[in-house]
Length: 387
Ligand code: 0PR
Image (cartoon, rainbow, N blue to C red; front, side, top):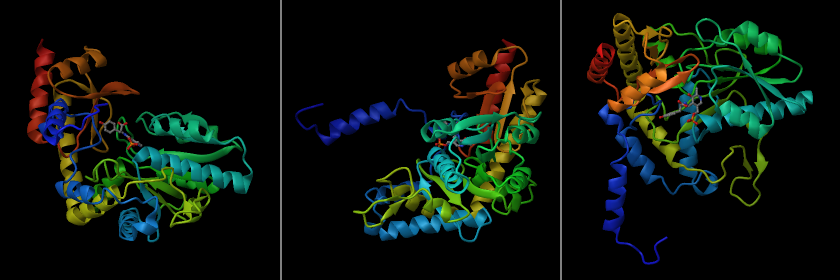
């Protein structure tokens, strides 16, 4: 560390030169990210609220109110009138909180001491972290031919130690929606906690259905659903880190609350103690600013671009893994191995990611990717094909 303080100018210059090495969403070259450029208003509000600490909400009553309002607003499009939850540090903390609530509930009510959770093989790796941290046995159910959770496989894996089952509404790799309606029935029949990971799809499925898409139900209308993860920092245009966990009942927050005697609020249920108020305020602002109409337009535009890319890839004889249900397209070249193709694309300046199951190039069509970018991308693919 430097002993003498540096001049502001010098510090900012060094930062600028390092920032120049970062990719920027606005170039349209980031094709494998579920995050995107946050709305400018959200960024401004984020900076205004940087000092607010929701870990001590009695000091920041205005920010606490904003968090409660965001939870209500998100709950409103997930079909719940009185939601309970928090704005947290992304889908990972949200999923961790859901699994903790499920574990503590099963321990109290059913005396389960060797808890197991069943997730689809497609579940995000945050469940692996949650299992490790919470001492859960992680059981991965198989997928069906469309890469969705196989209900039969899930049923076969239920034991007396099962404390939660998980469905994903918009899988990380392919963006498909698990059969949550059937999971809800199974949860009720077997008295199980059902968590829905809609980190990606939560900010698009409801809005797409508003404008005539017929995507499957996944929210609190299904009586078996106990909690939902939905990330404002993905399709919600909020800045990182803005995740959200919503519970159907307050008892799930209570079962994991710990005493915080010397703070202005005497109990805490979140994993993080001192926690940013800025994401809650910024998410509140961006949701007011965009409104449901804006989210409908955004989700629809992403879907139009997704269909365009999937159709064009078909025509160019690339193998599209599944018909996209949300805004992710996964594909392979008939001859070039996936990793090799990803490397060639990177050399050409396209930052794609690859899925593992099945192995494929994975393109997440976020709002920063426009039709023109896709036309450009397709011409690179054509060039690669002809070489
Ligand atoms: N659940 C689902 C379904 C997810 O897709 C993700 C993240 C999470 C939970 C965890 O969310 P956080 O990362 O907010 O904790 N999915 C993305 C992924 O792993 C995250 C991401 C975003 C990765 C942007 C890279 C990137 O550039 O692909």
